[in-house]
Amino acid sequence: MDPGAHAVFATTRWSLVRAAGAGGSPEAEAALETLCRSYWPPIYGFIRRFGHDRTSAEDLSQDFFQRLLSRNYPGQADPRKGRFRSFLLIALNHFLLDERERSRAQKRGGGREFVSFDAATEEARLALEPTDELTPEVAFERSWARMVLEEAERRLAVEFTGGKDGHALRWEVLRRFLPGEQPELPGGEAALQLGIPENTLKSHVHRLRRRHGEIVRLVIAETVATPAEVDAELRHLISVLAGS
Image (cartoon, rainbow, N blue to C red):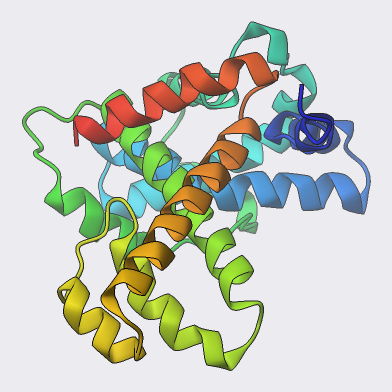
């Protein structure tokens, strides 16, 4: 096994779950906030496809995060019983079924907001999905897949630019050639824009895509309990994206 694998799996989402489940400390609060910020798009999309309107989905998403804390779901989670997203999906289903039985007159959220929502962006994404075939579970999976790719691209951008302004333009051009992106200009024009030969551009794109793939694996590794699960989860990610 790669010696660095132990370090990767020491900082998995499951370790955040355990930290959040400890409760009663700033570290636990920070861990829960990280989980909420990362996973609210799949949760919000699931609730919308479950039949709730935008306003209700926003409130219910906040309520769900509050329940995670108030009932200490993180403290009850067991990585041996499945992947983190599966744990979330089961908890979310239970929450929505319970919600149907609750009084609608009760004020939601208790006045506390766990994470700032960008509901408009998620609504725009949902609007592009075929509503006649998109179940809440499929919406959740697709949003999860997008989350993985977007997080990988975010980390790659930080790594590529290194905070240097001179690398920002090159990144903005090269990122269009990452998987899932649609280049707005042909390779020849991109090379001309960067002032490099087209063969050099192809080499840059090849290296960037390879590193992107490595980072995708790292992000996935943070959502499973053991290294043995990474390949299966990566295949699942590809299948979800292929069905989009």
